[in-house]
Length: 333
Image 1 (cartoon, rainbow, N blue to C red):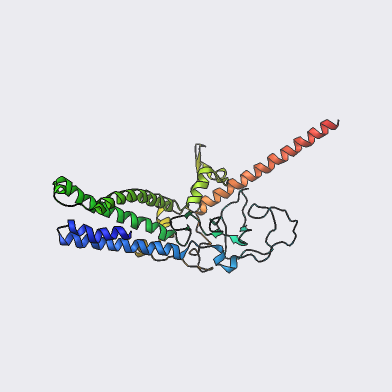
Image 2: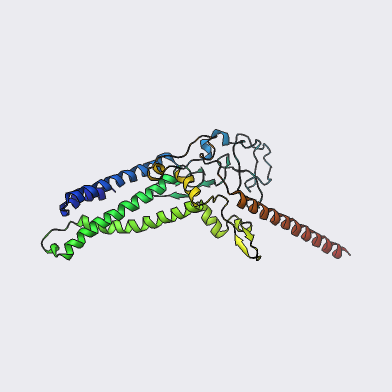
């Protein structure tokens, strides 16, 4: 980024005749470069957020029985918490077995709100974890997701502007045969090629991120739904008037406009500028990464499907037990 700005401010002016055009393109380059750097460092400095940031979510006491192998709330075996979760935390996601209940992390010793996942690389649970980004060397989660997406768009826009400017200069040079007389800086050619490459890759990444925001889902949730990792597809459906099965939307999907505001805030200045719209306060409503707004209609259908599935599982289990007992009785006779 620093090298590209050097090319834009030092080398490009040698090939630009209009002072007004030079002023405009230099101003845009400096503005986008500044926004890129602010978004980049805010992504790192703010961090993704973790349940460990809230003392109320920490678990201080577990069952003292060392031989307690009962299945815990998060589907794992081992000691269970001897304390209740905080009243301000609500959960809506179903566990692997289709049951409703609070989850906790035995490694972090904390309660896990909705959309929280434990990151092995960070060594702790991450609120609304999206993915681990090696370019930032940090997780992308609830508190820094907005800055991460803005960085993608700032950088993609910067790259396309740099490509447009350098491509026009190179086109004019080769179209008018000036290359036979004038010296062409290798930095100009490199910036044209690299800005096109990064512009395409970051543009696609930014477009995918915008798609995820429109659906109010994360990369992890997207993959879980794609591969049915947590058995979500067993409950995420309904039947239309013709009896045809169709998928339900995500329970956190509130519509494209509301989904966008959930990440970027309500004002247009928060959409354009890397300013925070979240609060690391336990009772901050839906702005702390602990509680999330849901689509009540979809959630009720989802829970109804899970309840029916659990009833079916119980009936099948009862039927298998009855068949097993009848076979044992037949063998004894």
